[in-house]
Length: 159
Image (cartoon, rainbow, N blue to C red; front, side):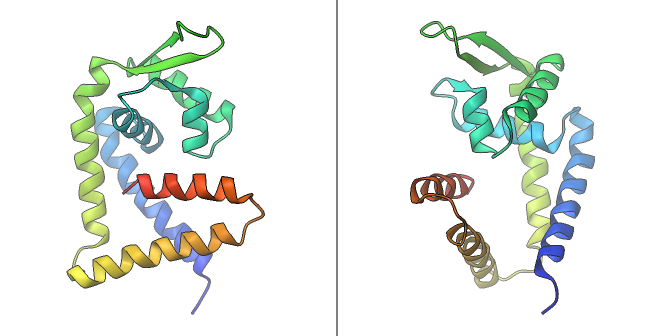
């Protein structure tokens, strides 16, 4: 069957490379697009850096760098939480809102390339297989059941 991990990594690199090339026209990276999408889906509540770090499973410092570059590009505003000055809330700017549709279109196009020539049954099977791979790896980890449930919920939210 070959080395699955290597194949998955190569697919991820191709996907990210294609996305980054398309998003270059908008002046953003794939990571920044993912933050914009998360912000859009969670617009009804205050979003914090901690929530973003957890949602993307990255270190606080990594997310801080992504957010700082987005602030510099006038895509985000970071303001103290009025109820708790210890926390800062993150908001999309008008500039970010204006490029979200284009960024989403790039992502949808790239995803359509991935499943090009798939029949509807193959698309469904592919999605179920991806979930099964994710689920198997997650369940074989040393995380607590609570952590596993949280990660699995995040995985499902990205549908």
